[in-house]
Length: 639
Image 1 (spheres, rainbow, N blue to C red):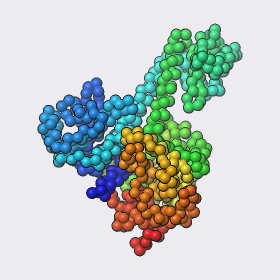
Image 2 (cartoon, rainbow, N blue to C red):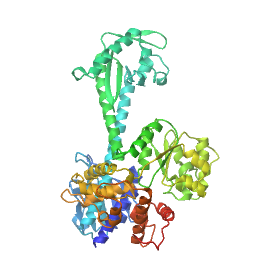
Image 3 (cartoon, helix red, strand yellow):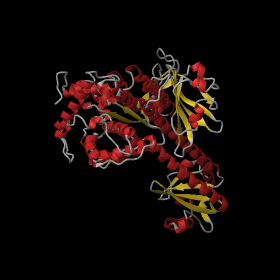
Image 4 (cartoon, one colour):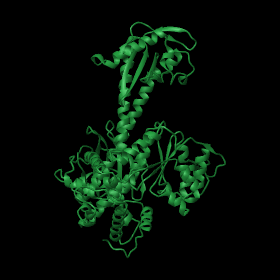
């Protein structure tokens, strides 16, 4: 039974990581409830959002039997969900749930016998929604069952929190836009060099220019007389000195302004200052005193809140991204700084689990396209017959099952970034079509005779040696050179030294908060174990190990899984108390032995839930490639 429970826990970790890691919003919640139902063999699982004012639960995703229920909203009064909303822990009804809640009309048609639910809350403890499940058989109280249920609930809670921040961000940006654009007086935002970065419609009208484009990027000096600009310059030192914590000052007297027509006019004005991420900005108001002060306070408050919300969303999406100070990762960061501002195509290489998508996102978020969403396509996750439609789109009736037209990822990524993950897995038959799109900047949906112009920045990633794939005839040489304009190699975790400890501590802080566990610090023994382990699954494996260790931790003590305490003789041959730098041959031996162990444990089954690829947490295609490259056969023995 312990082995079965451990296997169930590993399956749950695998389900929640692989089943939801590439999704957000509706798709995320659908995959979460489906995977939870399959993992725990439950009749129905649903996740909701809570309307406290109406005391209603609105379903975000509901998996029942073998399909999704399209819409499921209900009042919580009289249902087993009512005590869940008021509780801080799991509410569990092992059997006879219909007898205990006779006023719930939905339980009998669903054939409910047992029920379990857990509230999802924000940082202040306010209820955001809940995760619930019912079954048509009794469900006894089992610690392993509850641990897995809480793990899925923590993922649902994190996504609900992210959505909450995203909505507040959109509301703040809309409010800021209405405030600035609806003002009757002119408002300019300027950078530290006094070049205009934003301007409202009233200012455009005030200065007699056609549109905002005629002002943005120009110096405010062009809009003022020599005397007026001098007044502006004289007031800035007082703002920079921050006398008595003032961040806004009234400019004495009148400021003489210059219209495009050459006509001068006098205006009352003020200047405010704010700092976002270390960059200084000024806001120049042309208004009466009272209106100016009110608008200034609101703009500054909304600017700060918006910046904070952007940062919160970034942290929620990419916890621990680009952590570390090893030479390898510092070189990667320098390459990101060099290439991000351009539209150059980037090819990211590195082993599975090293964080190639996070690197791609870091490039996108540092580029001029950051205001648009980065679109991702995993070339290994889609069947070959669907990749073309996914990338280029199709029109209605283009093929069997094409009941409606669909835009491809290239069109969705117009003016943004398209991340082609696992590009080495793309079928050879589609590589020529991809090359044509990259060269001509236009796509042709399946079944259509028309082409669509697109402006897309490409970032590709692979764990394969594409030059070797070209030599073998598995990858087009011309496409390889088209993608390999600016290569960035992401080093494996085992080559990053003490970064392993920093990354592990970042994951501890993240998962401890989600799992309501005490934040623990890594003692010398655990640090040595982490540094001595070869990490074939890289950062993804480290995150899974840390999350599992926190779930199993007791009294604030972190214990690594048995993997770190058994079969250590081979690792100890290559490591001492002080971690060493491994040679390429030593790393090859370590990886070969690790794959052999996994294959023998899986009875030489490569793919599937109980296969070696699942144990190693890598795609089956990747494992097959490694088996072939390392010359592994069933006659091999573990040394």
